[in-house]
Length: 533
Image (cartoon, rainbow, N blue to C red; front, top):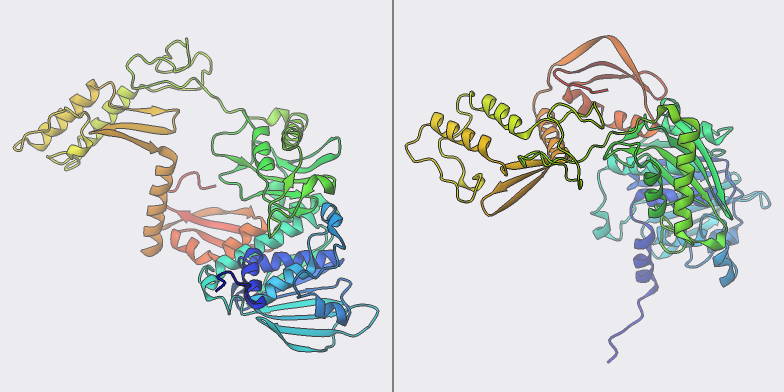
């Protein structure tokens, strides 16, 4: 008896849908791209329940006649390609039939469209695997797609969806990424009956980038354009005066398609080498224009990843464009981060880890006078001097697993707290290999039978996170009112975070108010907070 069998069509469609439709934002992205391919100039998006209950995308594109409406949701039906050679010259976003077939397989799907020739609309509705309506319907020129009850027939996939707030945020990110590269398209987004986004058509790319990222951000951006043979990179990159702690405000496009391309990411960061502090990332909107035969857009089902020929040349092109933009327009603003030879501060000799380097003085650095070096031994003395004076700060029986040396003797049972503290203090001051700090980023601590490595930055973030959770779950801390309110301009994505998490900010002690458009007013902030701006 044969073991290998051909799956029924409706099961195969659900499996294929999983590659294209990961979450509601995937549906919105595909429908926006279909609308753009149809020549739409105004697109309305509406969702309910973060897209899980309803997604509706309505455009004013060229529309479709009844026969095309029936064909669009079928597998491998498209108007974009005719033969295999066309796959090497794809100039559109995608294949309308490919996306709609996947979406309709995992939802209650409705497509209504009308073109300018017939003057009347046609409606097709499907549920899972079969059509339930195929009839005339009034509709203006253009297309409307409604996706209800996403993943209703694939409960396992539905369980992986996040909260409606999170899914709505992902949808907004997809809309903004699309809007960045389509400045002439007007976009409107409503969720649960509330206006989330109204992005009017822009007269220039710069105007659209400023509208999405915020005009305050745009003040720190410089434009770049650079060509090499058939490839061209264009866009906007931030001065070193504007950085972020992550890459969420880095947008990359290849032939008008939003992508995640590692070569572009690494080349951008390499262009800032020597001018950014560690763990800081620039803001960037970069678009690569390349011949279609040099780009393979079919390596990923959702086309978020592409393959570009001659990656080394692409890397050099992006890096050079960033360096030219920074050096040509902002040379006086480049705040090069000081880097000094790494010193093994607890080594006793105080010698640089660089070969042949001379010891650094405790209070200054001959190469960089502003880089102050503090002896680790003095840090230990100061820390224990403060710590030892606190009542009950050190237990009478220190944890043997945190012994300073494997062969160190623990205090006797009857030893008092004072004697224990004094014993540990003396041992700490005399210990050369107790612990040491590397590059002001990592702490190495010798323990019994091993070594503990602590990432200072991660540890600090964890402390802030734990304290923040306690504040949210408990009583809001007192708020320090500001005499003159501070005006802050937000990006569209940041504004949505403010709207959805306003109550959370209140629990943290922030007194914030909307101030029209994408602006907010800060009237107060938690007591004791520093450098919050």
